[in-house]
Length: 252
Image (tube, rainbow, N blue to C red):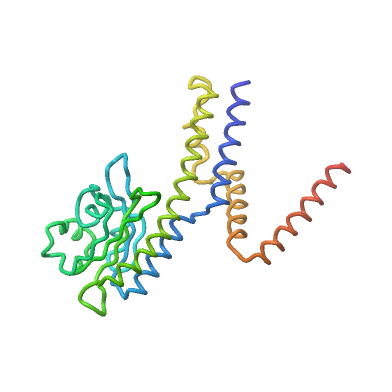
């Protein structure tokens, strides 16, 4: 009975942790990164743009978001972190503009062919946060010119800076979640509670309770993304409902 109670308490705590993450940063990383690559592609008049993140444990670059030619095939693609032009930028921390990728020995043609789109020119910029390369942003084939210039490189660095901040915030939330889960596992003990099983039971929010909690968290996330006046109005409505709920409990 005690174990069942502890399991339920941990399940509810983990659900609250996950819901809090959704409310504070509801898909903010991927959505913001997608907005950044789309804006970059339009501004540069590029055929495509993408962002790949460094997976230090696997020593790979993972393409997180993309826009334009070959975007569906690019997202989720993994390459060694020292391979290709993106790998060169990730390993050196230096931006690079290549006007003719076919003549550049660093170009990974086989990887490009997997996406169904082989570019002519590439501008690649490292995503750096606190002197650490956490990813690479690329724009491909400037439509109005045969290659990218120094002004393009300076402009892309502004996009890369915003992307790096968004990625860092998302990674910080993930690290906090991992630290909390590790602490809960240590408190619970491996023999009394299966934390992995509890997390699996939360799943993607298919049961009624979890789905409701996630819907509330998503609503709070949406409220946080709108203007100050709208936020204050929503908070006032919530406060009114809270006072009503407390008064009902007192009378009952």
